[in-house]
Length: 120
Image 1 (spheres, rainbow, N blue to C red):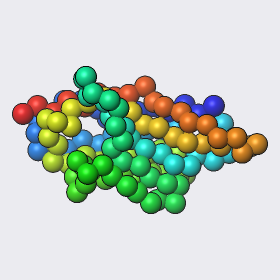
Image 2 (cartoon, one colour):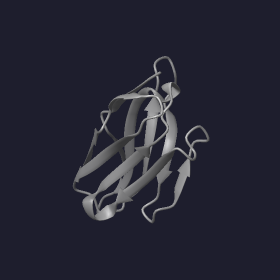
Image 3 (cartoon, rainbow, N blue to C red):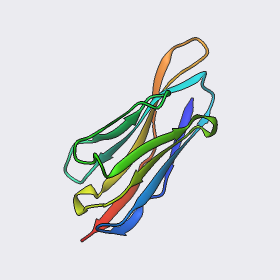
């Protein structure tokens, strides 16, 4: 099993920055694609940004140019640098990881979420 723990959420003013971290722990042969998702009240969970093990990235249009996803495979940690934050970025942010065990069976794990609130 792979356990994910997010940190770095909190209250920030519009225009400010915040960095989220997602630390993975547990037994896995390989942690492959990882991503950040968010869910605002009354809305569906949406993909914010994703990154492959090799470092290829993609972003939601709403965050392009403002957010940067990265990962450190040696530390089994993923990051989301959020700049120029807007009130509409307010949401619970979740990290997700796709991983394989020694038998190459694939699984996914989710973190518990971290609240980001952007005040205007």
